[in-house]
Amino acid sequence: MTRRAIDLEKLRVALRRLSRGNLLVMAERATELVPRDKLRALVGEFVRLDELAETKSGVAPVLDAVRKFHQASLRGEYYESFAVTPKTFTQQSEGTEEFIAEFGRLVGTCVRASEKTPGPPLREAFELLFGLLRHIDEGHDDVVFFADEGGSWQVGVDWRAALPAYFRCLAHSASPEDFARAVGRAIKDFADHERPRHLTAARRVASAEQKAALRALPGAGR
Image (cartoon, rainbow, N blue to C red):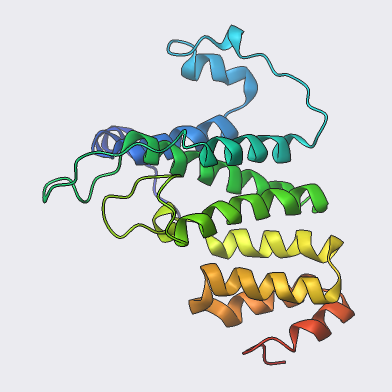
């Protein structure tokens, strides 16, 4: 089936109806997708790009960015509450929206990087991000504010993309026992409803020894 051309006017109308949180996620994606030489045309009217020159870091750039985000999150820099009423309990604060947008951007960056450099630094980046989600799910009310039914599920991670990428990184640096243990924990914590699918993804990237260790996991099958 041939894809129909998108009516840009209808798209503009649809964009105006989106929440601030969804627009933030879109803006984060745009900064990754738009060529560097087009950024000034996109955001130059609103952001002083000349003040945002890149600085070199002594660690892998992705890991460096994740570490900074992890530290800022635990310091409560994204935590912003508001009075919860029957009219506001479905809303999100600006801080929560910013956390979700940045989290999604960093996960996407890690997923793309895993296709080229699935080594220990990227494994650490994934595990720092997963650690924030586990912190939230443990009931700690200090990273983000959810007005109702708070949990990592509200962050909206695409686990079908994130977990296979994480497993690639694990397979490059983990012992068979550590590989199986980390795979099992990640699936249980974040995507147990699709356990067979994710175990299959783990087996695709595992060594023979890692596959043998996976078979010992509950529900692993062959």
